[in-house]
Image (cartoon, rainbow, N blue to C red; front, side):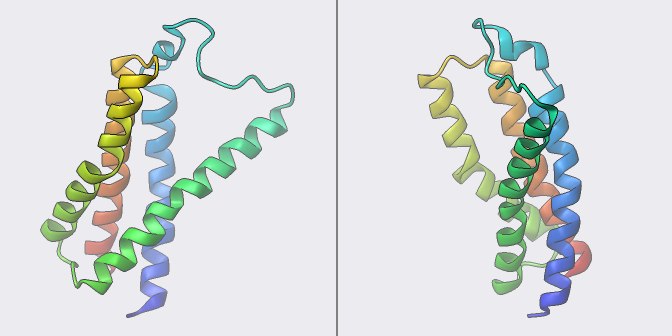
Length: 135
């Protein structure tokens, strides 16, 4: 294992995925978060608290990249097609069922569920692209 390459790929994937997170989880269908009154967004008294929350969420979601990429290296999944296949399998195994169960029990607009699902697919696809490019 070349840990330097793995770390490079994970950092690049995390940075790129943070932009897709911003789009799919924040911008796309933004007005739908308020469909059931009150919305789901936390209200911050201070902008610093909001920035801290954004940073914490970005770091916590970077765990996906920092685990997916070494996993691909460990199992020698380094071609674009194979890494995208693994990303699709991981997507169907983890975020899709979780988001669907949230949609069943929580008042979430279907478009929010769709955008979050697509956001996770984009994150995993970026990881797969970084695997094929850097490993």
